[in-house]
Image (cartoon, rainbow, N blue to C red; front, side, top):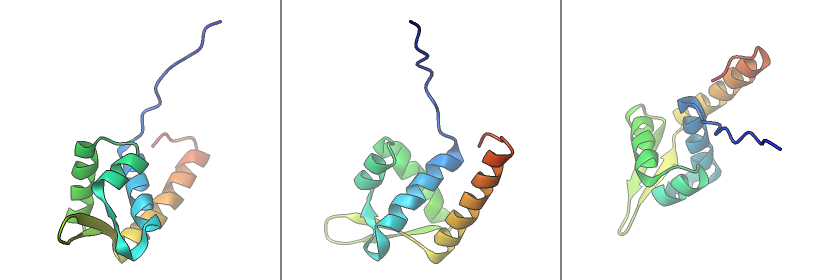
Amino acid sequence: MAISMKQQYRSELGIVSEILQVTMDCGIQGTIISSIARRANLSHYTAMEKCQKLLDFGLMESRIDKKSRSFIITEKGIQFYHQMQKFLEIAQEIKIRC
C-alpha cells in the first residue's frame, strides 16, 4: 500500500494570513513572537522575518515593555486580512493556487 507523503507547502499569502489571524485573535494586548511562530507553525526566524514585513507595511505594530516585544494587528492590517480572505475564497473557487 503506497501512501503519498507529499508535503503541502504554504504560499507567502497563506503564511501572512495565518500571522495576521494569530495577532487578530490576540486582540489589543498583542502577542509575542514565540506565540506567533508556534501558532502559525513557523521557525522563530521566519516568523520574525514575516512580522518585520508586516510592520514595514503598517499592517502590524510592535510594543516593547520591560521583558518582551508584542505584535499587534493594526486597523489597516484587519482590513487587509479581510480583503485577502475574499481574494483567497475567489481564487479557490476558480481553482487558482495561492
